[in-house]
Image (cartoon, rainbow, N blue to C red; front, side, top):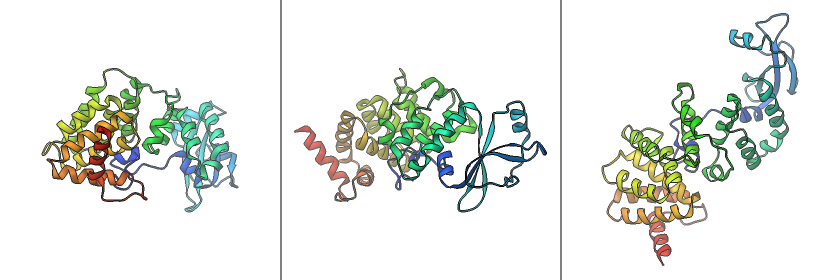
Length: 316
């Protein structure tokens, strides 16, 4: 994934992210809000069709006991279902209470623009839901932010609750949200986080874990030039890490060099230019990952030379 999409937060995952609610809605031919049928409390019946034409008995899902208890005394609550336009398969998407209903109406109104690729407004909207008191809306925001390229992600005006993010990092049912939470922590103004990020790099480097890139990029964002020196001298030194872990950290540096703070980018160029002179394997990784960040119109196979050239320019 690092080679395919090096600028994405999800490039640091060890899995393929599941489609978000918005993506599923875009891909749906029929969208409906439903409740348990008065005639059969184990079956769902449509109460509002948001898209398409839905028959009264078309939804194949049964009402589970948890939903039945939750929705019984809440006449305004609904369950959102959608039918995939290609497969014809019905999927349960979300439980819709008051807060979720407001968000759903807004999403449905904006969906035509988002279907046409209007990513900036989509990112801006979901950034406003980050940290929402409604846990489902907060999770929805996290999953949407997780799909952004890092430059767009870091440019958003985000209200980051560092304590809340840290408290949910190791929830077993939310491990797929670890990378985006770590990246958000890197953008926070929470004091005293340097050791946390460094320990994350060290811990995941030992097992060659998929989180090393997220921790590395967050550390670069949070600490700047000091993080560059620590990564290059302590982590990228020969034989310090497994090959894939080194590669992932170099990729994180290439991403930050492309879209991060200017002073940190200068530090990255300077530190790598010094290090690659005595480390052929590192030179190869720099060549690979910095080439991947170049525009397609630029000359390829210039990774190491670009770093050295830019270092020379920056020092003149």
